[in-house]
Length: 137
Image 1: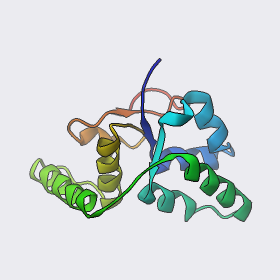
Image 2 (image 1 turned 45 degrees about the vertical axis):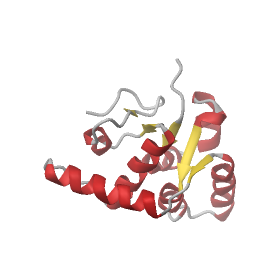
Image 3 (image 1 turned 90 degrees about the horizontal axis):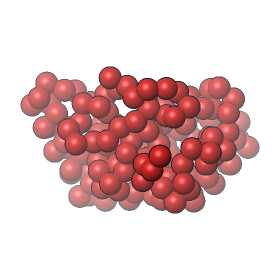
Image 4 (image 1 turned 30 degrees about the vertical axis):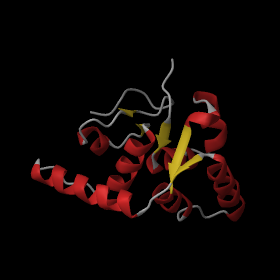
């Protein structure tokens, strides 16, 4: 099945780590390496919680070779606008998820996550991690 570019949400990385799995190995099993995207927000959310330095180093190196979506002032402003639009719709979303959503839209990427909040962003493509089951609702 062709998906195209994907941005791997923090919770997908964290879930793999908590289950003792190597995120690089699992992700490369399910996705084309050239389709894997990340952003600074995901890097911070994931790597800040890794307690084993060797694991953090290897995961950081893997993220280094993923396509990075840069966050400039325009992206930060677009995330704020998205937050206001969602708020007007009665949807509250945490700042980091607004940034990740905006990065995904910039990359034309599908968000791979089990966080159902992302499904509330109009126009954002979201799938559950293939190793976890159906898309969140």
